[in-house]
Length: 115
Image (cartoon, rainbow, N blue to C red; front, top):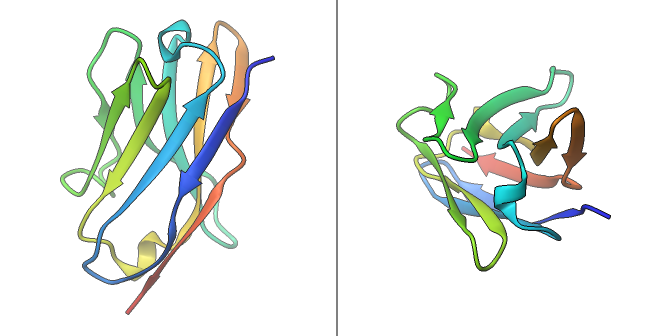
């Protein structure tokens, strides 16, 4: 069974940094692509970053230049590095992996940015 388990997040002041992790139960290179999303209260879930198995990451305009993704194959983990955080970045953050038509979500982790 494929599982994605997230860690990280928490409370940070504006301008600070946080790192989120998403650990997979299978090789991260088995996914066609992996993504990071977030959902703020009352908002639609927003795609932040996508990386295909053999590609470079693409970022949403809202986070470009502030957020980056990385991956560690042996640890079967992807990361979302968040810098210059703003109060409007407050949301629940999710990782997602896709294998053909099958989609797998992490459990979500809260990020709260105080002003």
